[in-house]
Image (tube, rainbow, N blue to C red; front, side):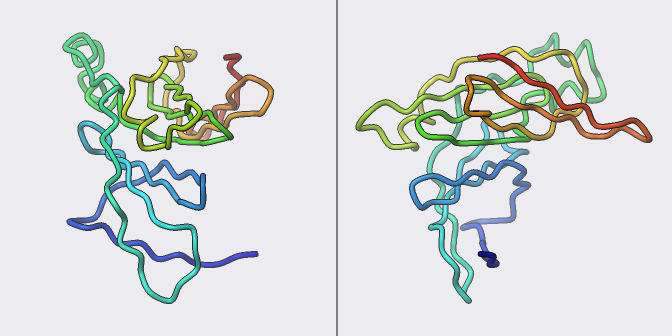
Length: 160
């Protein structure tokens, strides 16, 4: 089944690259905000645009350090921006340009509470342009990187 779901944000447009679905909600993770903002809308088809609800700020994702800025004066400030997002069962992952961050939802806890807690940092191989992630259902992550010029986009698996 395919449909179009229109979304508007409560205050302004956001650069959203991370989208995941859980518990009949579509979660939208804004990229260029500090800290990243997590919005949601109901998972439903409608002729009207749904206004996204700001659910929480992902304060557990560390922001770039002075060392990040020193090591990469062109892109260091963007190293902590979320570029990918997935939810599978009680586990969620947020991908940034540098690392992944794992959230686990405890019994009785909703996703908003889970995303308000500190995540577990998953160090990733040193690749540029990491853009998409999914939980593979076998205890790992599948991560892809953005194609640079004429090179091929790499795909790799990270064991959790």
